[in-house]
Amino acid sequence: MSENKVFLEEIMTATDQPTLYDELLDILAEAADAERLLAFKLPAEKQARLEMLLRKNADGSLSADESGELEEYERLEHFGRMLKARLRQKHRQ
Image (cartoon, rainbow, N blue to C red; front, side):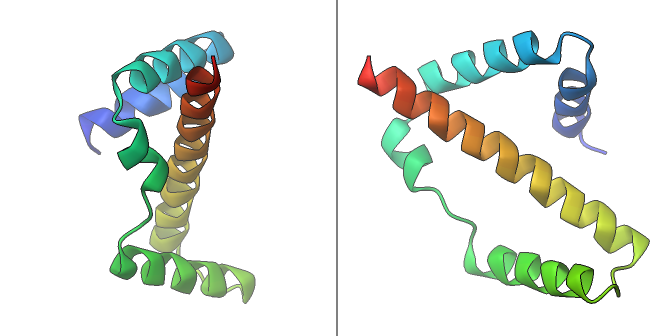
């Protein structure tokens, strides 16, 4: 498991998660290249993999490893949405 993944999981499972999560989002939103981040989409091969995992999940044929991979996509997708929302909020101010 990468250090970044462990770090994010620790932050996301902390008892004061909303506060730490918000602070991390603020830091990243302030330092981010807003246009680049807002335009970010998964590369085609990663998008295809995600779609395959979603199909397998829907039909109940996801392996344990694939389930973990799908959970990782979901966590990163959520984090990305939150970061994009924070960027939009900061640029409206």
